[in-house]
Image (cartoon, rainbow, N blue to C red):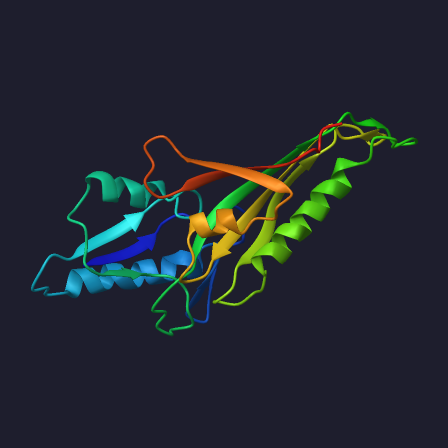
Length: 213
């Protein structure tokens, strides 16, 4: 059995303070609270089998710490207890995830005469279509489609020649990355591959058909 918690946090600075017996700061809940609880449980446990304290890195990124353990670490567990903030409720399952990279290109042009269209608008329309195709909703049993990175444009008076958006997709129970691929809107084609040496994190690329002008 593994007690699994992560040491990293999402980027961003929050002042750390101790107030009325409570620690406030970046990562205090996600995930230092569960991590400390697991350390104490591990030190006080009297297991009848193999108990592993798995304190991993890069959980908020590509899960490199967990992948390293799976590829060459302790014995693979029959059960994993993942320490995450759940308001002290037991969460018996969790949604999966994938990242979709959408890239559009065009001839661009001057902002005063957008005769070739504007890929900023096309990018937004395609993002909305992905949401509709996957049935986006903020529920455990649904896909959640969230844009996290948008890169467009070079100067204020020029229509971009290239736009990129990254969508964080949460996959509900019973669905897979392959199902996600098949559910993408018909006006887009998608390819995917696995990172070199990776066993867990698919990398997705998505391009709109006929977008280049």
